[in-house]
Image (cartoon, rainbow, N blue to C red; front, side, top):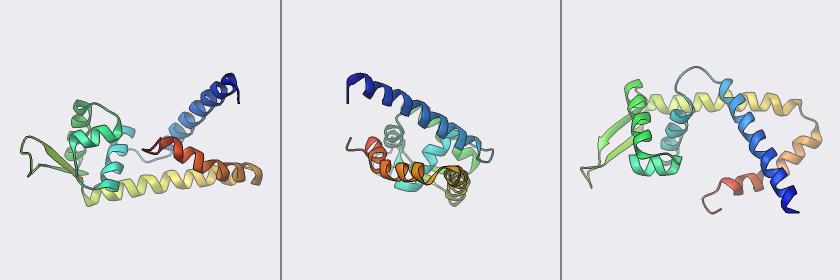
Length: 143
């Protein structure tokens, strides 16, 4: 693959993933924004995390994550407590309500994605299936 074709694929993939992600977010129910849902989903997946660790996993500044967590705490989706090992640090954990929210958002968005996939030809669905390992490699921690 030439440099220009790699750049073309990169540009098209960037736009397609962004547009798909945005359209699936719009299919969800009103509530916390994408950044908050993403942080909450990370807490559901990894369990209790320090705010700095959560910020790093989400790729945002610690101050930004602190504001996101404050919003989620106020809404009852997250609890925040001091770290017993380092009293200067805070730990965040998803509440049961937060876990239900993430599950519901995922369910709604997965249903919308299923609806869209059903509209594709069998050839396109097979192409997506074959491409999944490559897409997963792009977002893995090892890449």
